[in-house]
Image 1 (cartoon, rainbow, N blue to C red):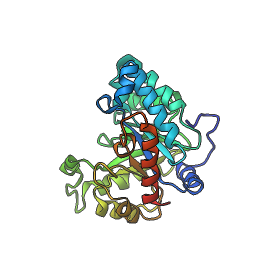
Image 2: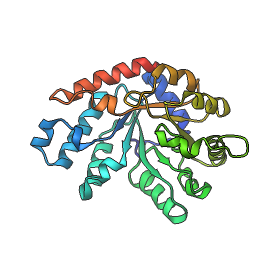
Image 3: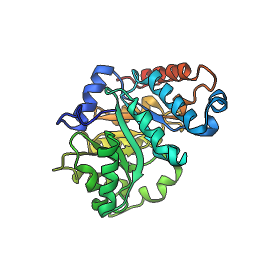
Length: 277
């Protein structure tokens, strides 16, 4: 995890570029610890929270040299109840300093609520970036843009089938996702933090469109692997701009036996190779 002491006054994009160059990777590993998919030997040996913590820490240790980021999906940790936040903290604290961290919390409230969410993610937990829904407008995103060196990944064109329900609607002669992306990026023109975009791997035409429109904006790209996104297509469509390509299930559940961490590492190596640098 990147702590306050390690943070330097550079942009998130610059930090990502440095890591991409040094590690020759754009891979983001998603930590989505679903109890129904954990190796059975862990569940039989530990209470569920401890099994989740052990599983995630082993995945981190085995794949961190291949990844430039880990994305922690809050839903899976919050579902553990009172111990969920403790497990999340423990796993987060075990992430090396040369890997960026993403709080996949999809926050999206206004006023004081957004400010306290931002404080929780950045000041208390110490994440480097966060996912946010922009449906409530600029004042639901602005509180997350006050931290130097961080990134707020705004949902623009998501990889789920229902994303088309709203994101492709025509608004003044263009699809809604374009207006959301353009406006969201403009909100960070004069802020310490950076706006990034969540752009699903399952719609590379949209990804290419957004990259041409916003060549310097960081993209967080889910959907490679289990959701059917092609690594080669994603890298071509995302161009030369800042990019993190996430794979969750395809890596962390590649194996479910005693050697699950080793198998996950092999899957991470393969995905990193397919993505190139």
